[in-house]
Image (tube, rainbow, N blue to C red; front, top):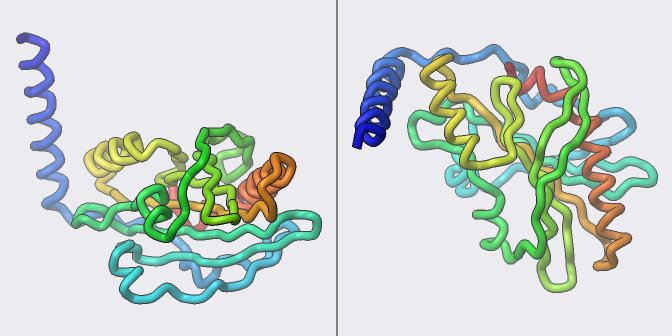
Length: 217
């Protein structure tokens, strides 16, 4: 009973602080627009995949996004989507790709988390990301995705929500982004799947040094 009382008290205190913070104008970080995001990234060349339908944007609730395909000699093509949310206080929150893909006919057939060594404005580090293989009919794709905010990279949707609340209280900020890479395997062999995953990892490593200007710490 004592433990429950302590937990309830802590929750009430956190909620009170959060409400007080919410009454203040949220601090909006300075960032570059995705309009300036480079098409050329470390040997990868990008092209726009077109704008989303307004109905899709309304469902996503994003303030700004990137929807491009990148290619590099010897690598599988990579589809890049980055959805940026300036604030998540009013119900516009990041959606897990696992909630959207089945609606488009894609079903996950395997899932894991992998560590990727990267370098960005924080220097060298290793980040943990989600790694899925999805299938629709005879087509397969490798999907890497993660949540990124305030210099933090999170694979878990649950912990992403927790950090959003903590940072809203601590920093008076709830901005963040979902970063997703999609790579077609070309065939359903293990070798093709491994090559697609390697291409996704290679592009993620090329991408990370660019993200800090658009997803501020």
